[in-house]
Image 1 (cartoon, rainbow, N blue to C red):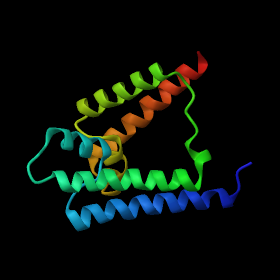
Image 2 (cartoon, rainbow, N blue to C red):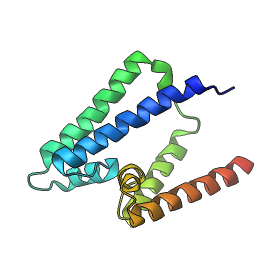
Image 3 (cartoon, one colour):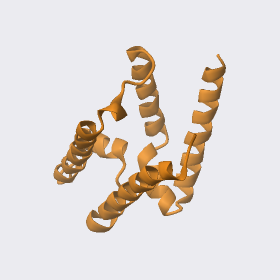
Length: 138
């Protein structure tokens, strides 16, 4: 049964994400989206490698710290490796077609009430929910 105490870690997690993204936007003038940051790094834009590497290193360091503190939070997801690989590929394709990334639209864009991000996030969520419902019923 869920209690109000369960909401505290969720609140703290959301607060940390929001502060981190606000820091990127205000401090560096960058919208922090994982797919766009990594994709841009792979394209090797001139003068943009350092901040992209620092952002990704910070994400990895945060995940590693959490893994040490709470290893149970990193249990392997259900499903085969092939299904996970295809799922990741489909997310990447959708990201490219949508000209953005789920974290950039879902967090940064929504916090700024960007109409494009609101539409993209609603689409991600609705299609994700429909897919989970269909696959869950199968």
